[in-house]
Image (cartoon, rainbow, N blue to C red; front, side):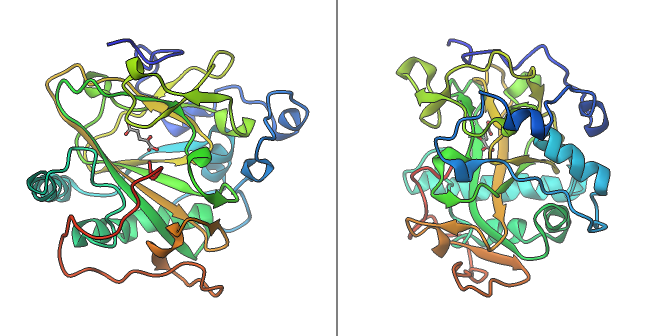
Length: 313
Ligand SMILES: O=C(O)CCC(=O)C(=O)O
């Protein structure tokens, strides 16, 4: 299979911590405002910093500043090893149900309101404490997707930003990438392009068949951006990234599965169209506007019913 277009996300710094990441040179927000790289295709998709004066439960001011500068933070251990093994067992049980219903490894997309297993992860306090520090005390979860790369899975996730895929405005969603399996250079871990969230929407095109993309768009040119950083995580750890951050992952050439659960959180002030606001969980606080429809904890795990498929990457 061809490598991902642009820089291949291997052979780079695989041990980067959030403090090391702070050494990456970033343009300042002012420099960016003057930069011709900022695309105004959808001006509401410009990055707005999360930093404010709240003390933070987990993330102090410096950490939130790093998020604003680089567009991601990692790693956070949110589940202990025994809980992480339970996450794997739960995923495998869920996958069996989906496979038996004729679906594939990437199909568990948007089922947080149908599957108690996912609903319970989405509302886990250890995750929400970190999200609260970024987006505030009112927390809506509107999307989930298991990205399960089987051993020797040729499928790739081409460089992309999430926000252009979504009918959401403004760009204010933070994604949790929760490692169900250990993820590293041996099993197609994802990579981030630090600082790329600051450029608005990057030029992109439809992916080609040869790219074998799980999704369908590819950033046309990553040259001139910071080099990729591997999202190396142990099972039970998570990373968080901005919906404008460039990221992707190559084919899984090795014998180890690489599964991660993405969870999309935003403050209730975000507006969604196409009915995506009806498949939400109000995890903390409230939505006084009533835009988001809260889905209560389901009784069990069902592969059937309504869910987001299109674009809910
Ligand atoms: O898991 C991957 O390889 C890609 C995940 C992704 O695109 C995302 O978190 O938005």
